[in-house]
Image (cartoon, rainbow, N blue to C red; front, side):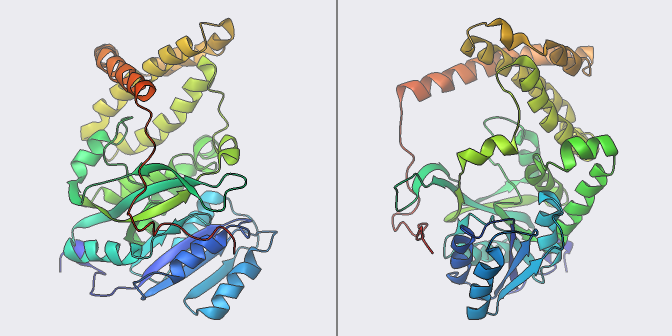
Length: 371
């Protein structure tokens, strides 16, 4: 049997893993979508990170109705990243599907993903359409904000590695919005945890969990020839703007804040590209440098050349000191095409303001907004 075919069967057990902390008011949507799955051979693993609200009671009500729901509670809060991966370690299925406690899946989600794995055993991850929705005060139902749509196809992993770090990435993948093999996800956690053993690196990057979803997805894909994308179903993500500042506490109104923001993602992805994806490391480093220069320029214009914008400029100098002379030349060469591409994209958004199209005419991505 091929190494990539291990664990694939006609109806493998799929574990839907829900890490949660104080999600009692929202987790019902995730659980309800699991109960509505057309693929019945599933288990739902809820890893409660020592919640202080009624999360346990809400999950218990679903577990009483359906024995496929399993609830685990941490004795203490172990942090979001550790709890995220703990849910995989508690799973029994050959495949796992992460699910945010405030997100949900379309009814045919698991069924379509399993079909992809059975049809293409060499795929490392299956990624579906992704829909971002928000519930505004007074609205009874969520409204669609953004739709990330794909074509039904397999994409070679070398193509993903070569373009993942780009702003206009055509094939974004992440553990959170994809189904994969349990052993691969647990292995990615071990790799990411090893990165965090360095005290300084762990404090700045591992513990907050910045970008771990994307960098771990790339790690999972390294031994596989391709990833699968399908538009026959969708992962629905509830956006909560009020919490975004807590997740990314960066001041993007100054040079110093912007550089620190870029540096976080640069260091995380550099750890992978410089060690396991060396073939793409030069492209990654130079593109990142050119993109940072573009961002600094556009933010300068947006802030109307105010003096306060230049606060922390020394961070930019320090950032570019890590580049060789040849890399700096490549950054300058990439700056102009990136600049015009970004300018055209900005102009297009100003001229054509189009609402996001709702996925699937039957609107089956919708769920009740009250339990």
